[in-house]
Image (cartoon, rainbow, N blue to C red; front, side, top):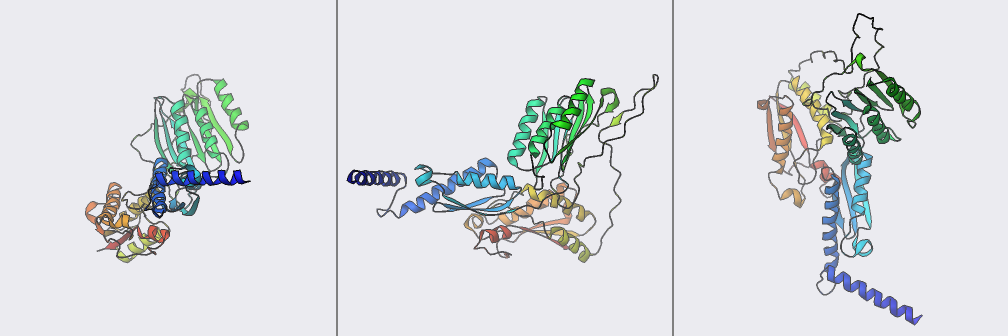
Length: 414
């Protein structure tokens, strides 16, 4: 027994000695706690940056505990961020130098519906990816497989959004890419739980294989459908590389809505050429919007738009988070029916990181004005103002309150 007691004592001394050399002290050991927290803070922030989550997530380390805050684009991104912070560790390894507890103070962005994604194969063998994906790692997986299957190149217009159905969503999307790679032209369209493969098959064998795979290889709750025809019966709508994909919009149907399978073309005669079927028929022109000249009505329209969709920023950043793009696009559309001036006011919280940059609130307002101007709102109708931290709407003593205070407000003026 005595031998074990001595061994335990020696082990403790070695651990304390190693710990002390890694984290300098004031002689009483009081500095170690702060040194550990400072080191882990940097490690945790680095882990979020490596993950690409620094645009929406903030982390605060206290001792060996961490609190993660922010509005996560999807549940997948939130869990990845929690795991990344939990894995952060300093000298001494996980046991004596790592983060022991991660407190989840995040919220989730509003889900979009319908949930749509598409891959379109162009004439030069390039594929365009658009629509929604349920997280960064899902996006990376789809991009990697698309790059492998389509070496001529890919155009990535995918946007991360909450709302994907449960089940093997990413695996089903990747399966559809494999089928698309066998076609000479075509597209794969995913709408909620239905995946549609349509296009031109180089031969009857490929057509049959894809139809059988759609019926037998897709896991529930997803359903596979096909519309495969001979190459002579298809005319692929041209791709427009400069055409943007709309970001997530919780209350609006995305522009890339999946069209129902077209009716089979008439059987061609020996003298008449086959009738081409366009993959992406143009949508009818929208009715002209009703103009609102009254400033009160315009403000009500904008307030209603922003009621559940705030424009917020990561700590010490003026970069607009992608989750806000959809709302800003709708705001630009609303501005087109309200021909009055619009004041964009940027705000900050009172933390040291934000207070260190007195121009941050102005930069946030400028970023929104630049975005709206790029969407067609006349620049002279827009005014950007930085209000600093003088008008809080949340408690600056809490992480959630600080996130609310890092915001933009829109006001209609004459």
